[in-house]
Image (cartoon, rainbow, N blue to C red; front, side):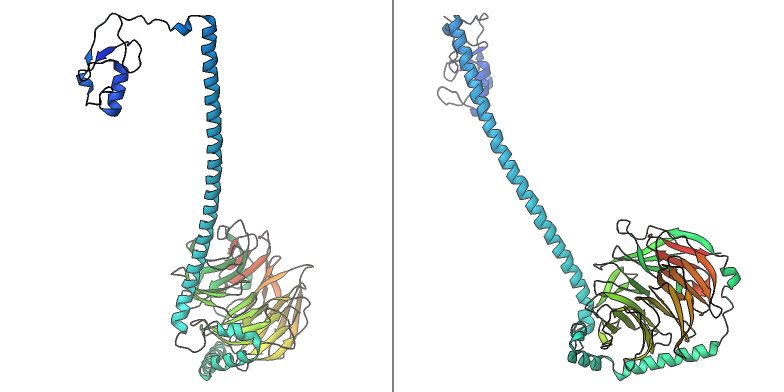
Length: 505
């Protein structure tokens, strides 16, 4: 008689007996059962592996199952196994299909969640930026009756604009402008016609060559530097505005970027460096003028003076007020401390977009260029148009007043450079440039001795003789900005080829 396992009803290979139920088991099976349940399978009483008693028997020879002793029985067994495998395979395929559908649904949900998160992140960033912009405005404008944005919003409406003007251009401000102009005029008369001894002479200027070029200031994906300015008190500090919407402050002596200022939603077309503070200004077609702290690297004020793209920017000699021109046909005079628009004026008869704006060195008059080729001279105190200079054809692209206070240089899309005498109110010199020459930037040096022209190339003229002393063609794209270092010790330029270049001996 052979032993039979109480669990499998088959002859065990390693039989053992349970002292709890006195039943014989296959050791492999009873160990698994005890591991899972910890009891005897027959009566449910606690049982451990150590209690099992091995039974010593001779090696058993298992009898063949009666069903496997004939060929038909074997075939039947194989057929049953095949059917079982097919059924199992079908079940697995069904499970795979279900899992795929669940995975696809989960992926769609994940994608939708990512989109929602991205949108919310963008909204949070925009809200934070708006909050950061509003905080300084709220703090500065709170004591006043008119909100910072009101004059800008009311500008085109007629009567509200008049109210904001009366509130803005107070007698105190007008007196401040007059006092500054008196001081500047007195200083100019003291200087007379003497040229600073440190000023580079024309023969040395003609020997200038490119000494440095920097192409990594702005993004390569949206190439182009659109505007340039130097810090008047430290001409080693260079300010650029790019097509990549960024404003960059660059240190020429250290050859490194001091700050990258981000906030505009469109390209930056005008930049100005404050002469005495670590503050810079920028304007953009996104209709805003931004005031930035260089040390803090953040936007401290947003001036919303216009309802269309801002095309020109100029800082008053007091350092407290900004002049801006816009495609909305208005020029605006704004307080940089509060962001308030003090006055906003348009020439009703012209009905034409303004393309550029520049203060006269004394700060009581300024010039604007228009899209219909006119140059208009305005009296700031009276806010009236006092003179017009026709003669160009095509939109005026740049204007520049000489430090001597008498000359005005203008460029337009007619490949010519015109010079005007503000005393006689007439054009006394026209320099015709090459065919299709595009004038993009005009700049007198601080002494009014040299005039630099940037566009299809760079040219420097000596004033009074109006002869060309320099010509650079190093840029591979249009030159959008030129500027002189202190006493013309160097010349710098920026262009659509994304490079900032320096020229000197």
